[in-house]
Amino acid sequence: MTKVKVRNSNFDKPNAVGSKIDVVFTMKYNKLDSKKFKEMPILEWNEIIRVKDEDSIWEFQTDMYKHNPTSMTFFPWINRYAEAYNYVKAANKVSFNGNVKIYKNNMEPLGINDIKDARSPAERVRNVQNYLAKNEGVMEITITDLPQMNKRNDGNNKERRLDFNVGFDKDSMITFGQGISLRKNGGADVFVTTSKEINLAKGKVNAQPPEIVTKPREHTLLAGEVI
Image (cartoon, rainbow, N blue to C red; front, top):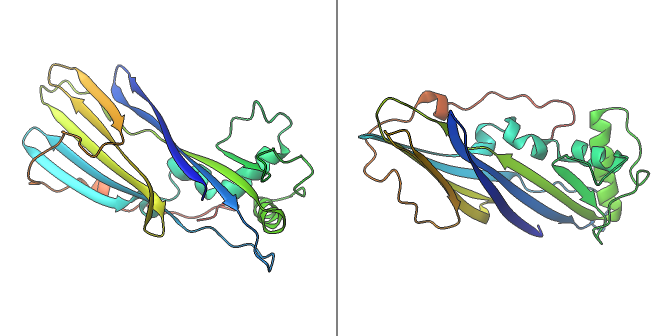
């Protein structure tokens, strides 16, 4: 791993308030003496969700990547090799709008012929992995999360705090948090911070999180997808 960075922008729409959070992973692949491909460690996307709705307070903690790996949030990650192939084969890399890019060690984009043409998603994965195993390279993967809350007009206050801890093999690479406050007068606030001091949803937990939050999602990997 070379580096991980976070960038964000907040939004306040008529019916919802939230943030667009991009977590950008820049990873250098070093080839082995055997020149065989070695897969990267499994992503860990740990979240603590804490909600206060008037006097009710609940909390839920989980590794969201393990909880729901095929969510749209993690699409770039599980499709990292197939999407890297698409970037290599793009006629115009400047206007390419995908979330995965692959470069040579000097950060120059690969040429269109640097990776063999593929006839299937699985072959795209193998061809990119074979290139990295033989030549090394750098992959840039951007995961975009859109945590938000629907506005309400029921006359109640509601607060939510999200704490993120992202890394690999229990090794934390970056931590950050988001806070949202919905006021009974219809106003709303949202922010993203690297500080651990988020003064929202405080108090003793006295309720259970809803099943729609806690229930793991069933998932099946499609061709070209890799955990």
